[in-house]
Amino acid sequence: MDTTITTRLSKSTLSVSIASLLLLTACSQKVENMPQTPPSNEMVAPASAPEPVVVADTSAKEVAATASPVIVVENEANISPAYLTRAATVAPISPPDSVSYQQNTENYQKITANAVHKTSEDAIATLSIDTDTGSYANVRRFINQGRLPPSDAVRVEELINYFHYDFGHATKKSGVPFLVDTQVVQSPWQSTNRIVKIGIQANDTATEQAIKGQALPPANLVFLVDVSGSMSSPNKLELAKSSLKMLTKQLRKQDTITLITYAGNTEVVLPATSGDKTQTILNAIDKLDAGGSTNGEAAIKLAYEQAQASLKPNGINRILMLTDGDFNVGVSSVDEMLDIIRKNRDNGISLSTLGFGQGNYNDYMMEQVADNGNGNYSYIDSLSEAKKVLIDEMSATFNTVAKDVKVQVEFNPAVVSEWRLIGYENRVLATEDFNNDKVDAAELGAGKSVVALFEVTPVGAQGLLDDSRYQKTPSATTKTNNDKTNELAFLKIRYKAPNGDTSKLVTYPIANQLSTANSDTKFAMAVAGYGQLLSDSKYINNWTYADSKRLAQQGIGTDSTGSRGEFIQLVELADALQ
Image (cartoon, rainbow, N blue to C red; front, side):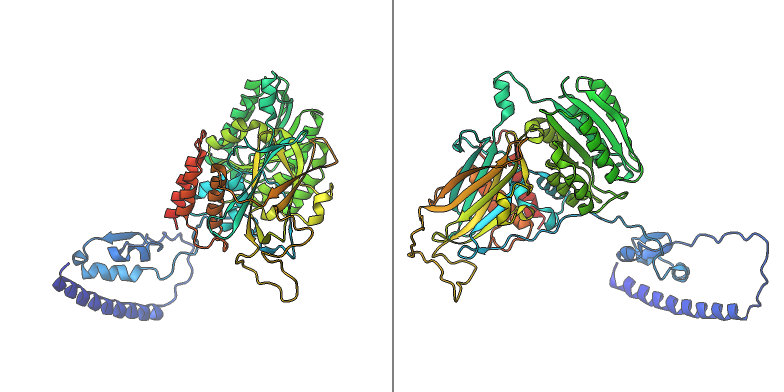
């Protein structure tokens, strides 16, 4: 549009606006002077629809929410003054009263990063292991949808423990159902600090039994499926059904399956059925349909009752709960739900959760239910993830080789001035809980590996905490009778047998010896850096996603499953979404 046309239109528009105001004033006076008509019983025809509002293309967004139809005009010069006058008199001033918005009610537990500790004042870290992987898949869902996750959705240890690690050089002690591997390397984001990696891997009894011609113990599985209205979308109930079908096809005659559904009411859809009745089980799964509210309390109580009725004393007894965690009938707070689970977890029946969907997803509920139910928490964002959890890692998911596994690390104040635990924020235990067998901790499934990373500051290096004015602080040259300066830390692990009540203790000194990070340690640190970036950590200096990508590429190894390559792609996407 040239300048002449623009000027002409502006003058015309001004004239029309003045005329419109005069016309509106006159109409108002006439309405005031009109005689009042008594009410009539005759039917009155409805008012005609408002005429279109005509706007220039630069104003389309401003009027998009109005009640009247909108016509976007490409060339303002073609608008007649009369048409503009008519449009001005009907344009609404305020938006409509009722506007529909899709609210995001996803729920995550608040995470506050572990603090830095001065070793001379607090040398001991105590924690439960964490074998959950739900946070990794959920974070992946956010990134693949083009947005970074909320910081509270990121549990760094679950990102690290999503992957398999090599324990070929780990320490094996007689009678202990797991291997232990430690390494001390330079911190990638603070060169004067050290990363202490502690890795634990359960013996893969499935592989050992297969070599001996044996199989997994018989399984008593209860499928507890949420069929409430909130599960109606394709990435919820339909994906849950497909996941169960895959698992069903792996079952054997010695296994039993019970299928329970819950919405407003709870129902046993399929009583305990032999695992070789594949078609019967598949038919029951196919009939599942979503609708109604969500009574999580009644569902969990019934699931435990059914599991107890089919209990296999020397077998696998597990409830598999498939839901978005959006409970709205019965108890719905996390604490109330956990009270029910704690009362039932010591009878030999574990409870695992598989999470589905988005928008109303209750991650907090899902993770805590599994943790307190002596089970695992996984988030299923695709059928591939379902296959990984239920088929590829079946032994780790269902077959527990050690329970209530606790880790305690005591750092040597003659060697380490400061330390912090990376991740595991909701798995930290009190020091006295380590020796208390009544304090619950996590289970370790067959073949499953877990890694914990500590960042430590050597004595003599610049840390984050000032020395005490009144307390004596060790220096690099200070020695005492109990220094043991050849040890950086002392590792203790407590665990119980799957059916045991008394814990066993194993110990491992961690040498004060800096080594070159192997590929697994590099990859674990790359994932830790990525997770800390996503959660806005204040402890990683100028570390970037590009740094995590570079370190992950160095530690990719053979990557037989392709999961490490996928991780590198997620790092690239996260970098692009900043």
